[in-house]
Image (cartoon, rainbow, N blue to C red; front, side):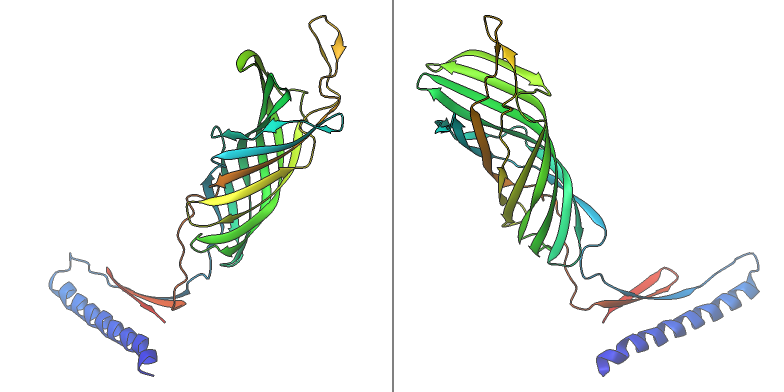
Length: 274
C-alpha cells in the first residue's frame, strides 16, 4: 500500500510547489510589472513497450562463405572442391518484431556464390556468379537482445555477373566474365535456415534446388561450331556461412515496471515507474 501511495504523494508535493511558485510570481509581478514569470505543471502517464516498435534496420552480410556442390555430368558424379570466399557478401535486413520472441524480416543482399569442379584430373574450373537477393523469413527466440534465436525462410536471387576461370595442371589458361549471362539462370530461388548465437555471430545454411547451369545455353567453339557446353551438367549448390545480417541490432530490454508517470513543473521533471 505504501508503494502505491508514493505517486500520489509526489503529485501532491509538485502541485503544492506549483501553487507556491505561482504565488511568488504574483507578488513579484506587483513589484516589477516589466518582468513576466510563468509557471506550468504537466502530468504524463504512459506504458513502456513490450518489444521493439516499428520497422528497424540491421546490417551485415553472409561473411565467410563455404560452398558445396552436388554435380553430375550425364548422370555420373563429377568431382568438385569446396569453395571458400569472403568478398563481396554484404546486405541489410528490415525487421518487424511482433513480440520479444517472434518477428519477420526482408532485405537486400549481394552474394558471391559458385563452385569449383574437376572434369578431368588435369583440368580445374572455377565458376561463380554475383547475385542480388531479396529474402523473406521469420525469427524465433530472444529478439530483445539478439543473443540467441532461430531464423528461416526463402530468397530470390538475380544473377548479374558470371565469371569463369580455367586451370590446366595448376596453371591458369583462361578467364572471362559476362554481365547478365545466359550461362546460368537469371533468377535463382533458395531456402535458408540458421541460428544466432550472440549479437555478433550466427550460422546459416542456404540451399539452391535449381541447376546452377543453363542447359540450353549455346555458344561457339574455336572452330566456330555451335555447342551447348552445359547440356549434360547438373549442379545443386549449398553453402554454409558465418552470418551477420543481423548486426547492429539495437539493444532492447523490457522494463520490470511496465508503467511510468512523468511530472513536469517548469524545468523540473520527475519520472516514477510502477
